[in-house]
Every structure is written in C-alpha cells, then in structure tokens.
Length: 284
Image (cartoon, rainbow, N blue to C red; front, side):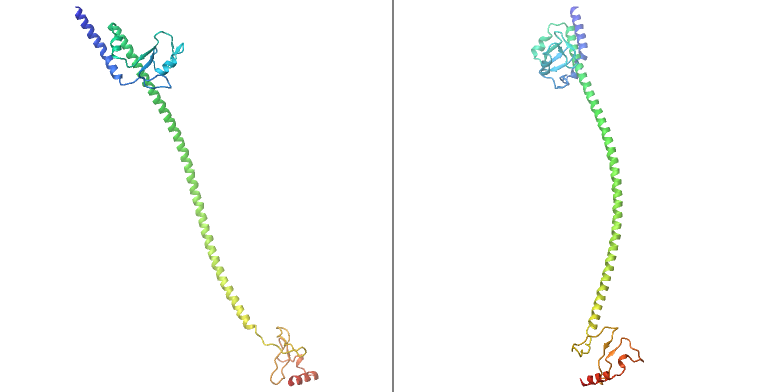
C-alpha cells in the first residue's frame, strides 16, 4: 500500500513538473540582464537578487545594497527583510546542486522551483517588455524623424522649385540680353562698314584735292616791277593784274577781272605819258 502511494506521488510530481521543465527549457536560451537602467549587462558569476524579483550585477548590487536602508534601484521598493536581498552564484557547482534541496519535501521542492521559474519568467517578460518599449520608442523616433525629413524635403522641394523658376527667369533675361547684344553687334558692324566706306571716300577726295592743288600750284610769274626790280606774283581773281606783252608790244598792261567786250577801259585811252611808256617798253 505504501509502495502504491509512493508511485502515485511520483507520477503526480512527474506530471506537474513536466510543463515547468518545458518552460524552463524554452527559456534557458535567454540570459538575465542587470536591471540597473544604466548597466544592462549580461549576468554571470555572482548576482544580487531581490524579493521584488529584480537582479543586479555584482558591481551595482554591492554598491547599491551596501547602504541602509536598502532601496531597489529598479522599482524603489524598500528591502528591509533579512532575505529580501540574496547574493547568489549563477553557475553553482554540482555539490551545491546535490545538497541545496536535499531533505526537503517534494511540495517544498516544487514550490521553490515554481518560485524560481516565476522569477525567471518575470525577468524574461520584463526584458521583452523593455525591448518592446525600446522598439516602440525607436519607432516613434523614426516616425518623428521621417516626419521631420518629409517636412524638410517639402521645404527643399519648394526652395528647389523657386530656384528653378528663378533660373528660368534668369535664362529668359539672358536670352533677351543675348538678342539685344546681337542686335547691337549687327548695328555696330553696320556702322563700322559705313565708317570704312566714308573713310575711303574721304581719303579719295583728299587725294583728289591734293592732286588738283598740285596741278594748279605752278603759275607764271608776273612782270617785274620797274621801280624795285622784283617780279610781281600774279594777283588773285577779282583784282587787276598785268598781262604778258605780245610781240608787237601793243598789248594792254592791265586788265580788269571781267572786262566788257565792246567797251574800253581806262587804260586803253592814249595819253602822252602812256605813249612814252610804250616807247620805253619797245626799247627794252
């Protein structure tokens, strides 16, 4: 009868322990992290475990729980009990594993194991929540950055469109200036051609005037002055001038600018002094 009761208890413990074991095996791939907000390192070696289901690395646990009263850095709970804070080894030896629960009733062992697994589950759940919070926060920041980026892209697009419009207007102004420049250049070329043509005409006229002046420059010297013996230059037009004497010596000494064909001038009348002058001229 006692053997049957022991067998039933063993089967009951085995059936109750199987889902706990599967849960532990499913979570064994996860690693506990330090619950200190500025640390978040993987726990290894020794760790500080609190009654409020938080775990801290040996460095921050020693620093935070050395003060009295002890306060949990994660949830700010007061840890005044004797066993509210425990420094435990995360990788115990085989001797410790063999003796830590030895002599305890199965219900106690299962209770301890269930609480230990609950602590582990809570840690994993908190880590998942923290990761989800970090992910949601990162997604919020990404959305905010995307919004800011969209606004900046819109503003840059507006500026780009404005600059494109300005460039197009400047191109139109430049084309207008090019057209005016081409017109002015054509006018300037036409003025240069006209200037060259006028310059050629001016040079030809000046050369013609120089040739005509050279042809008209040499003239016959006038008769010598009887009083001074100096040859008189030809008088200009519009004033009386001396005429050359003919072979008979009866030519007129003076002639007016426009004499009448049928009328006699003053110098054509005879006088005793003029007759003596003619005789003197024939003598010389």
